[in-house]
Amino acid sequence: MSAATSDRLCPECNGPVGVFAQEKNEAESSHSVSYCRICGIGTTEPQPDDEILHALHSTQYYRNGEGVRFAGPVEWLVEGMRRWRIHRLSQLVHKGRALDIGCGSGRFLRALRLSGWEVAGLELNDDTATAARKVHGLTVEASLEAFADKSFDLITITHVLEHIRDPRQMLAECARLLKPGGVIAVAVPNIESWQARLTQEHWFHLDLPRHLWHFSEKWLSKELAERGFSQIAVRRLDLAHNIFGWLQSLLNCLGLHHNRFYFFLNSHDLETDNRNYFCSLIISIILLPLFLPLSALLAIVEVMFHRSGTVEIVARVED
Image (cartoon, rainbow, N blue to C red; front, top):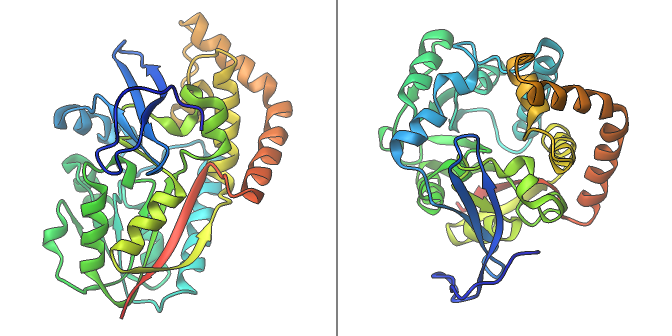
């Protein structure tokens, strides 16, 4: 992992801490990621306060109360992947009660419910939680303390752990909430991926300052084991996150407006009044026929070497 060395030592292992990446966002506030090679975890510095985090995870981030974030064909693809994930997880644990941590607008919970699960969600943003309750009629709480011990058969944390102030405590709480033999599925961006290593501050999944932490597969595997989980599956090929991660990261490396193509898919906003913004989008679209197959190839190759852009670990709590 390429990271500039520093005189700092990791508080966990006393190993050297380097600067993995630095990024300046549109508000001109600078953030960096410090990284410990031994622990396999990165930290965003400085971390935003609670007020800023609340704004970053507002209902605007999820587009609207329905939670529809992308144009029609893309949203259909995302929905199909949700259903495939539910099918995979349902093969590993009997259908019962499921908890989705960081449930956002509740669309994954809605799909779980339609497939026969009894569902509940955790969402720390009050506005987003209210929208999920009103639109989909879901049980959504703001704290895990609202749930009883050993009350769930399945817990999912999908690209949410990196947003949590204390991810270790979150995993410990999950162990408390799962029934004996229950399953947890945790998906995160992988800071030790080829995507991250080669594109660094241009990496799509860096997402500063919304991502407070930046995990590796080895860190997540170790933390789950220390909390009584037995790993039963690792999924490294996520077509949406891995291929698009490469695509947007490569476009970012060209010096185009950061994540411009993603923002277009997310908001349908052409921004014709901003010449730089508009030109970045047009160039991104022109390069799609070249960069999309290249991104698919890179995603497949990095999976073969266990250096995928994202990773999902599925583990069972000990009986």
